[in-house]
Length: 291
Image (cartoon, rainbow, N blue to C red; front, side, top):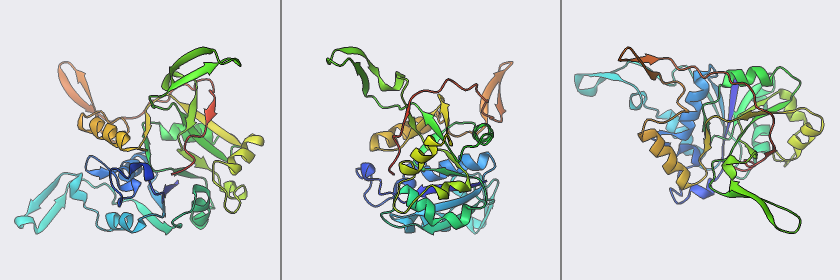
């Protein structure tokens, strides 16, 4: 299944980190966040990518054109570096289509710009700034079983704000961390049928008018998920990702073996995310409309 990645936004809230690097190229460890996301999709067998480029798309092209497998894989060096043998590869079996979708385009218009590459089959799409340990194929199986034209993952926000419930006179009935409230936001991780293009009109944002039309027709599906999901919106988010990665607590790296102890020995076990029972639907709002 093809994967459309929206990578054209300005990433204005990350400018304190860099004013020249587009958000998809902001590193977590020694690889950019877009690599982590693509590696996640590839783990589940989805290795055909369509990148919707915009702001500093040239840097994203350069990154992959000059990709060095040795950075994230073991290798053997011979003859003083003149001969390199990689023991594993990351992207050798990936297919990546690079498409310039405009400097100022919104998500809906970027999707329309790559229609020719995905219009014949169901496909996946993502904002390219969030990571999760979602069992992707279990989600696809459930979301594709019905008549939904579009499906999205809903997650609880990790923001430190407090949610407030008050009566009409202003008296607070309840206050607590928004992360503990029933509120869930659109986290992306879209599954889309080709019919989605019939719902997007010129200039429209994907999750605004098109999704409203789909919801009115009961053809918009929501997959609530209480597992790990986090997006990189601010420099603080980047620091959190870096800290998790450095401490070996990177749940989005579903492709890595996990350590389990048996009889006093550490065993490496291939990690396969479990299929969890679905919780009751919670209120969902769109917190991810812009890049």
